[in-house]
Length: 199
Length: 199
DNA sequence: ACCCACAAGTTGCCACTGTCAACATAGGAG
DNA sequence: CTCCTATGTTGACAGTGGCAACTTGTGGGT
Image (cartoon, rainbow over all chains, first blue to last red; front, side, top):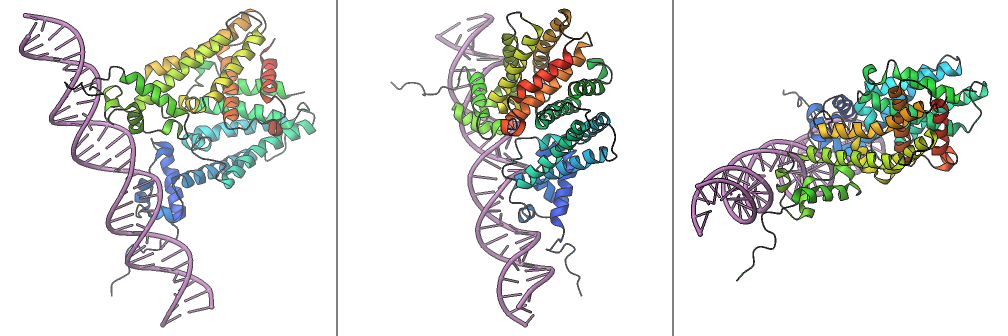
C-alpha cells in the first residue's frame, strides 16, 4: 500500500523552520531584505504557507528582531554574571554588545530599523526594554557602590547606549580600522566614557 | 493646426525632477522604500524613463544619500561659522547634527543604511568624508587652542561621532523624552562628552 | 536644409514579489 | 465516527525592478 505523501500537509514545526531559515538568510547579501517566497522555498513549502503563522512579512521581521533583543540581553547579562568592579562590568557589557552587533550585522540593523514597528509588536518593545534594562542594572550597581556619579541613571544609560550603539554601527561599517582612528579605538572611547561616569 | 503633445518626449529636466520627487517621498510613510515606478508616475513620465538617468534604483538612493551628506556638511559648517570657544563650537555642531537627523529621519537612516553601498559610489563616500571632516576641524581647533586634550584627533572624532550618531537615532525613535531620560538629555550627554574631551 | 548620431522618451515584456481566497488534508476533541 | 480547527496547497491579482526595442527630439556637421 502506498505511503502517505513524502511531505504531509501538516508540517508540524513550520513556524520554527521559517524563523530559522529567515535567520540564516539574514547573513546573506540581501540581509533582512530577503523575500518571503524564498524563505518558503527553502523551507520546502508553498509560498502561502508562512501566512498561516505570520500575518505578513513585517511580523516575521519583528519576530527576528525580538529574538535578536533576547539574544543581546543574554549576551549582556552573561558578560556581567560574576560581581566585580563597576568599571569592569561596564567594559565587559559594552564589549559584549559591540561583539553581538559586529557578529550579526544584518540582525543588528534590523533590530533598529524603521521597518520593525515596535508600537505594533509589544513583545518586540518589551524585548528591547529588557535588553536596555541590563545596562540600567550596571549603572545602578555602579552608583550604589560609589564607583559612578550619583546622577539620574536613565540619563547615564542614554549616554552610554548612544555611544555604544554608535560605536557598533561604526564597527559594522568598517570605520574602526586602526589606520583610520588609531589603535584600539573601542577601548579608548569606552575609557573616555567611563571617565565621564566615574566619581 | 494642432499643437505639439502637451508633454514632449524630451523632458529636458527629468533627472532633477526624479530626484526632487524622491526627496519628497522620503518624508512619507515608506521612507526610502518608495518604488521607482511611483516616482516616475508622480514625475509624469513612464516607468522606464528614470532608467535613462539612473542605472538602477540603488543609484538614485545613493544620490539621495550623497545630497544628504552635502546638506549635513553645510549645516555643520554653518553652525560653526563665527569663531568662538571650542566648547561652543562643539555644542553648536552637535545640535545642528541632531537637528538635521530629527528633521529628516528617513534621509538620515538612508545615509547610514546598508542599502547605499559607499564602495560603489565614490561621490557618496567623499560626501560622507567631507561631512565627517567638519568634526575634525572642530576638534583640531580645540586642541590647538588648548581647550581639548591633545590626543589623536581621529580617535576623538570617532567617539564624538559615535555618541552624536547614537543620540540622533534615539531622538528619531522618540526615546529621548524627558519622562524617560530626564530633562534636556541631549545637553546633559553632550556636556558629559565635553568633560571627557576638555583639558 | 538635410542627414545622422545620440539623447531621452515610450511601450511591452519577463520574472519576481506580497498577499489573499478558496480548496484540500491532517489532527484532535467530543 | 463526526465535526471543527489547524495548517497546508493552488491559483490569482496587483504591483515591482529592470531590460529590449521602438519612437521622438536635439544638435552638430556638411
